[in-house]
Image (cartoon, rainbow, N blue to C red; front, side, top):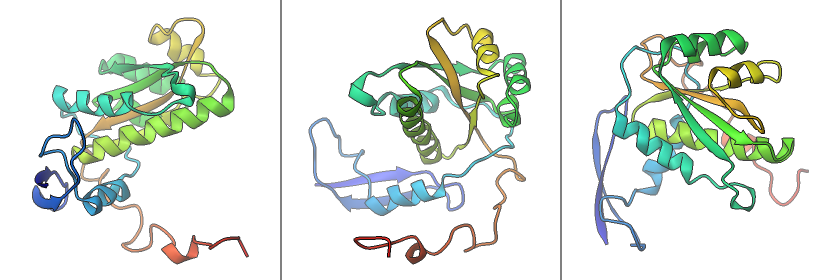
Length: 207
């Protein structure tokens, strides 16, 4: 099957790719994606802390949240709800309560993950998977994103602000929006943001 996909790219504009892709049940022809386009999108994900005031389109936000919905969880418990926060005063109070999260106070949208407590290791594993998926989906839509975490002392404060019920905890927050010019600047010179690929790889055993 030959399919065509339009992919937004913040630096190169909109590109149209044609790729031969295996059809799977439920997939329509516009959904097949060239593997290298997808992996390039994943490599472009980065932490952003400075946002413009532009709102995030509702259809884009819902698509990002649908990606989050499909995140795997231990035993498929799906133990979370997504609280979408856009109110400026609420975001300001959240950022004030949780140290090192100033970007959630200025981003137009913050997706907060309220979840049942299963155990620290399980919770961290699942929340990490979910947060990264949200950030990748945002990148695919040409948005910037930033991960934030409420430390233990801030969790009850943020929880009360958002009406999180007893038995659930809110730790993970992801800011979404369009980066300012300053926020979009690379943090490292070109080619220096990561070590070379070969420096990470070991075959069969470490040494």
